[in-house]
Length: 79
Image (cartoon, rainbow, N blue to C red; front, top):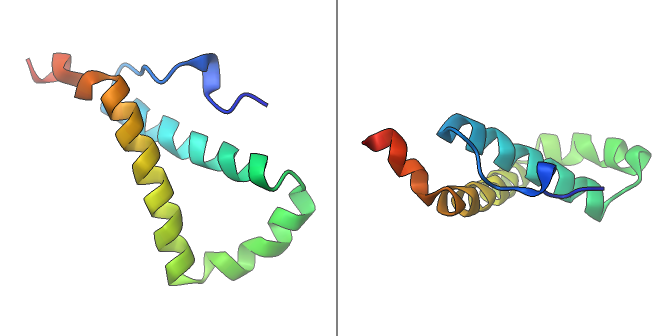
């Protein structure tokens, strides 16, 4: 399983970077818990837990910060 799709963090836009962050977060969860049945069994518990949702959002934010840094914060778009 490739944890970094296409083996790059470079994206053409901020929106693409955010989508990549979400995808990497999902792939990370899949790598940590590879059994699909177990993930499906656990999902109702964390899907309704505000603390779990906040933690998930934090993981995506960290991934996005990493991607943004790799893309030099998309400075070309600000020019």
